[in-house]
Every structure is written in structure tokens, then in C-alpha cells.
Length: 163
Image (cartoon, rainbow, N blue to C red; front, side):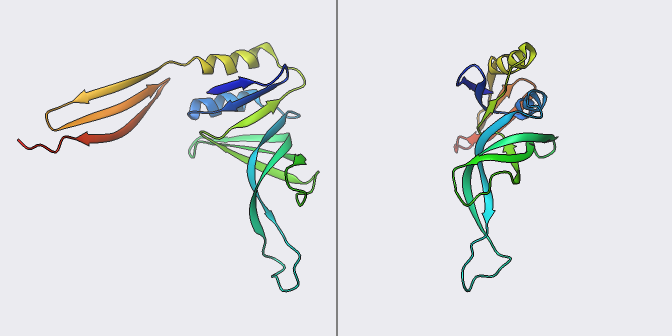
């Protein structure tokens, strides 16, 4: 997990694998403040627009966390809560929204007080060692990256020479 401390109460994180999402599930609690980019449907009031159709726009919002759930099959974390701030004035504050946090999506977590165990969980995942595995044959080469308990395969490279 890539982390950067913003101040004493805020840390920016970017999960790199499903273990990082599990760690964030353990760290993020009800009442925390999450800031990140998401999409939201904005219903525009035009004269000839369909009343039920809206436009999906990308906004940056701050959310007060009310519930959090992990979908380990799809490798994503769903964080629900009420909107505190937004980068677009069309997004009403106080309305409900859910972040879908996937691998390589960045968010900023702000807590009133970080517990030592929470800081240790974030920092220990940051120090995870990775290995590159290479298998070479006369006709092709296989490459994979081992990080924690996950093995990520990179497509084979073929030499193109016969025989």
C-alpha cells in the first residue's frame, strides 16, 4: 500500500492489492472522514430534458463514513456515508453517497485520533517486500510478481525463433 502522511490526523492511501483493501476495511471506522474522487449523477433541469435522466460527472467529495463493506470477489471496498463537501456545487451536502474503492484508487482518511494499532496496520503494509520471478526457456519467458501472498502473472514473452 502506498501511503503519505498529510498531517497528524490525515493519511493518503492507495491500495495495491486485495490485502490492502482488507487492511483498509479494518482501519476505516464509522465517523471517519474520507476524501476521494467518485462519479455522481447530476439531474439537470432543462426545458426539454427527460425528467428521469441525469448526467454522470466526476467529482471530489468528502464523506462522513456510516458503513463499510468489503467485496473480496471483485476486489473492492464500498464506503457509504453522508457528503460533507464536494468540488461541484450541484452535489447537495448532507445527501448519501457510496465510494467504490478499487485497487490503485487513492483516498485520504482523516480521523479524530488514530489508534496505535491502526497506524501499525497502515505502516506494516507499506513495508511489504515484492519479488519478480522469471522462468526462461529456449522459446519463451514467463514473468510474475510475488507480493505478500499474491502472485500476479505478466504475459509471456516469446522469442520468435524456431527450433
